[in-house]
Length: 330
Figure 1 (cartoon, rainbow, N blue to C red):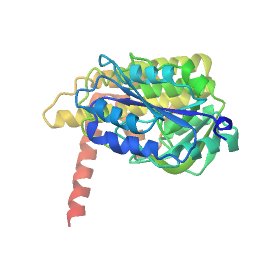
Figure 2 (figure 1 turned 60 degrees about the horizontal axis):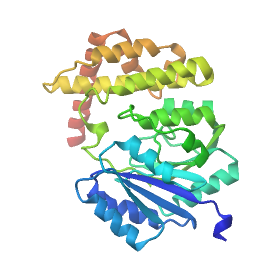
Figure 3 (figure 1 turned 180 degrees about the vertical axis):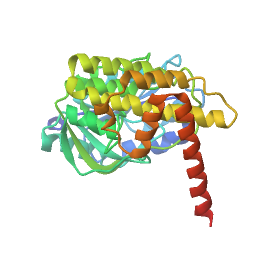
Figure 4 (figure 1 turned 90 degrees about the vertical axis):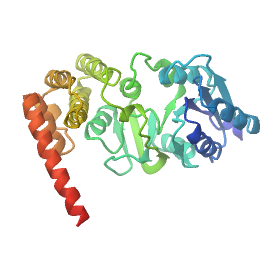
């Protein structure tokens, strides 16, 4: 009976992704889990996406649409959806992605079977190191984040107890790293995380998404967020500190490589000093030991040494990449 099956609330923030909406909403309304609600938050879309959402809601009472009068950002939209949710569990889905029909049923079954606090599934469309099904402590989960596998710190692709989600609103000041801050706070309250390797969530790559835009002030807010996360871990969650500091090192090195590539193409690498200083704030041998591969470790070490060393390493990487490309054409 439905009343005996916990209600799951799926929160879907929407802003100017009309070409992707139908596939996303169809995949949610095709869920095999029998007791769910889909709360779509139209963040003042200007491309007609709000009307698409309304059309879906008119056909299926499980879907509700909230229309914001002014564009407020991803965090505000998610928070609005959480406030309107009535479920015992919550899941987040980005409106340009789509999911398998068994997503909610399998994530919930994993929670029941393992007794974990949060369940996570595999994701297609991302380069993530795979791993077997497992149950991790919070500290071990941070280690997974540091090693970039078998899952990442995205808010989506996971199932949470609603009381946990309602206690941790998304930070509107974290402009492009709200998921990282949110999940770090989840891990401070969750005891165990269960992982199901099946790729039930499909991440859709878009060249116009924030993560694929040039390095700017908005994207660099991630440095301040990581400073806060690492400082908090050092004070209150020492078992998580090294893992979060590796996330900080990895993030700085990746952003620095993008800045150098832009500079090599005629752009400017004005943020390199910030990335170097960030690396030096969080560098430790324990954090470095969690680095997922030698290439990343070399980049983090070079950035720690200084900007000239990092430019040299980036030049070597470009030569190797070019040679591999030529070889692939032969």
